[in-house]
Image 1 (cartoon, rainbow, N blue to C red):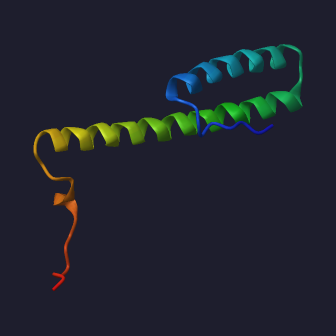
Image 2 (image 1 turned 30 degrees about the vertical axis):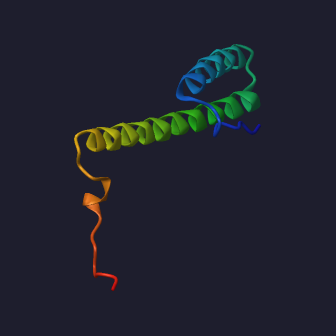
Length: 84
């Protein structure tokens, strides 16, 4: 099964993760090994996506904070030469 997580928010991903954990529990209780493995893979995919989106959000907030403090976002760029 393929799960499109790119357009989901972190909150939506968390809800989906809870839903899949419930389905995984049901699959294990019914001894459905194949579907349980697929569901586990989907849960892992969602966990990775949640971590990635959380890190991106943290970087965006940090950048916004630097801009509000008056620090130029270009301060971290190394300029090798000047254009004449």
